[in-house]
Image 1 (tube, rainbow, N blue to C red):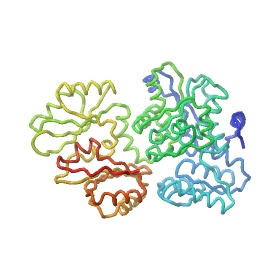
Image 2: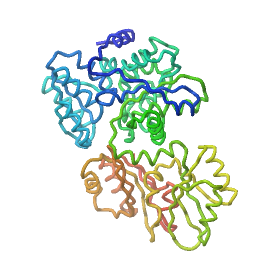
Image 3: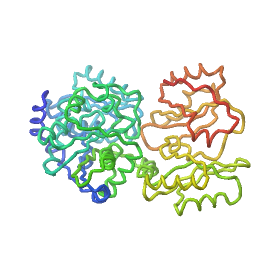
Image 4: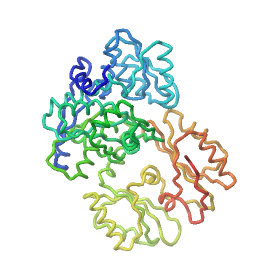
Amino acid sequence: MVSQELDYFRAIIQANMEPLAKVTEVSEMRDLSAKLGNQVWLKREDQQPVYSFKLRGAFHKLNQLPKGSTVITASAGNHAQGVALSASHLGHKATIVMPVTTPEIKVNAVRALGGEVVLHGHHFDAAKAHALTLTEARNGVFVPPFDDPDVIVGQGTVARELMQQLNDLDAVFIPVGGGGLLAGMAVYIKSLRPDIQVIGVEADESACLQAALKAGEPVELERVGSFADGVAVKIIGKETFRLAQKFCDEVVTVTGDEICAAMQDIFVSTRAIAEPSGALATAGLKKWSTQSGRKGLNLAAILSGANLNFDRLRYVAERTALGEKNEALLAVTIKEEKGSFKQFCHSLGGRAITEFNYRYAGPGAAQIFVGIALRQGEQELNELKRDLTENNYEFCDLSDNELAKLHVRYMVGGKAPEQLQERLLRFDFPEYPGALARFLDTLGSNWNITLFHYRNHGGSMGNVLAGFAITPEQHDNFNEHLKRLGYSVQDETDNPCFTQFLTSQNVIKADKLALK
């Protein structure tokens, strides 16, 4: 067991990853290097036998135990596979507790690696609680996914290899979930080369390190996003935070669309298909490089994993253009008359339309939902807005509007035809076979659903947009019911997408619900 920074450094130097964990390659990202004006390198942890760096921490932890130990953990992702493979190799017996919502492909992968799978609970917290109960009952050893000194040492070997492979670096970008990889890499890099900047990268919807740095201690986020599920951690570890606070120079947060764009960059340069959390560091590198304006640097990012469900690529492809600022989504008011669409196209100055949604809704003005291709990113978007203003079009930029991108672009074309007292809510719920039916069952049948949209993107969480007709008398009862459901919910009634495309002028809005 290690406790001090020098002990971590020495332990990382001495850690033996052979023969299970590979020395992974460093790939040059030529196209991105040319685009950013910096030399960009990618440390390829997707080349590990379980396609993730998580193998390192699990292997090092289990390698400290007597042969034949009983090891138990809770995980629905890469940590589970790392523990299962390490246990099989070292002669331990591994039990992995996974939520019943875990995709079958991940369950089968853990079983194929020799791990016993116990399915329990509908979320990670329930699975972890059951794993701790099993650990005590079986007199076993619980293997944490990140907040453990031996796990941190194993993850730190990524930095040991990187520093041997590239001796001239200015900054290293490291993805952050619970902080194990950042902690291990940061303590090694700063002990050897304090001049190299260590930059943590978080998904903006799961930024637990940024919240902890602001508070001065680990704090639990109220909710985390589901897209980059490999880093969807509500609270950073105590020991990982201590090391990150001391050795991490900066934290960058990125959006889901920026992650999608980084996944494309990685594919173009290496033909590797990263999972969203695996592309996190590259997204942060791009954002930091662009915002800082610095050129001529040697920058490295960690491709931390490639365990991606294939059907998620549909969602990634849809969002990549937005992440690269190669497409704008706009709500535009045009005249409801012959030739108005043609006139609108001419006002675009030759720019291509990628998407057009419209439905006749009566005489007068019409609202269109339109996607427009951009060749010069933010600069061209500003030029487009100026052109539309000069041509007297009223418009709203929806390029960063999550409701527009997730739901409304698939729903434009109809408005409520009658007077309603209506609320629009967006729900997240665990995705598994039959989950949508269960979601509808838990909603109950006491309120009339006025609008509903659901689309499966192959992730661990499903997303539903639903409208409800609610009278003032039903308000308190409905609000209490939502709280009892336990789903993550956001009120979208005042979102401009809803007001422009899905409601009619005579809709009466109910009082906004107190959803927290």
